[in-house]
Image (tube, rainbow, N blue to C red; front, top):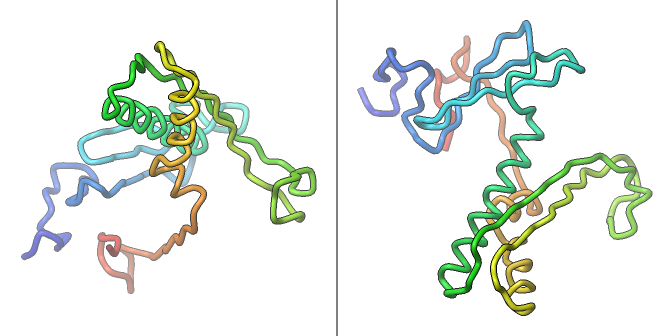
Length: 171
């Protein structure tokens, strides 16, 4: 049996992923709550009670914004440390909204809806204006920002059911 063979997994670890880069999400079809496993980390995603969820955790867009905010803050801290700049802390505030594409002056598409993420970045520390401007540029180069603004292909496949490969998602 190989490490990639699902039958060789430790069945005492619920939905553990052999690959720490793999995220496993489990939920009942009867509600919105989802249990999320990221390597050794666990969290819950849910929808607000106003839309029928139990509000047991952030909704999927909240998780997406958290990923972008965390990546932005981490990237800025790393860059400032490498440069020896006096950045003390970073606060990133994010909001997601759907806008009519026709109302967007800088959008290529004029039809349908556009997803807009607004990001406010607070830099704490005695930085000069040049450093602050450079950090704003760097914020827009964090890996998650690049993923969200680049070309993304999402390949979905059925696994673990009749006629499908058992368990693993292709690399």
